[in-house]
Length: 164
Image (tube, rainbow, N blue to C red; front, side, top):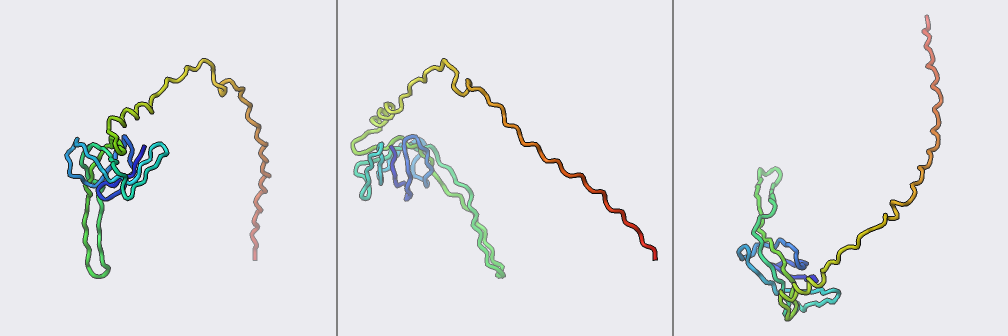
C-alpha cells in the first residue's frame, strides 16, 4: 500500500517503513505527526484518487531528526564590471519515518495487523539432492584455430656510396 501525499508544499510517494526528507517541520524529534493532504492511495491495485484529496485518509509518521542539506554555492558575476558576489546556502530538512497510510476509518493498529498477515514468511524446504547444475558433465572447451605464422622479414637493402 502506498500513497501520494503533500507535505510542506511538495508531493511524495510514501509507504510504510520509508524514510523521507521533507522541508523543515515545526515538530520535536520523536514527535508523531499526521498528514491529511493525501492525493492518491493504492491498496493492492485498488486505487482511490482524491478530488483534490482523499476523504478521511491520513499518513502517520514519526520525526526522526532535523538535518541540513548539502551546501549550495551561489556565485554571481558580471564580466568587465568588477562585480562578483559569492554566497552559500544549506537547506534545513526534517527526516521522517512513515508509520502507515490510513484510509477512511482505519487506525494505525489495524494497518500493522494487516501488514503482519501479508508478510508472514514460511521456512524454506531443505535440499537433499544436488542441483542439476552441479550434476551436469562439463564439456571440454572448443579448440582455437591455429594462428597464422607471419612471413619472415626481408633483409634491409644495403646503401652504396657514390663517388664523384
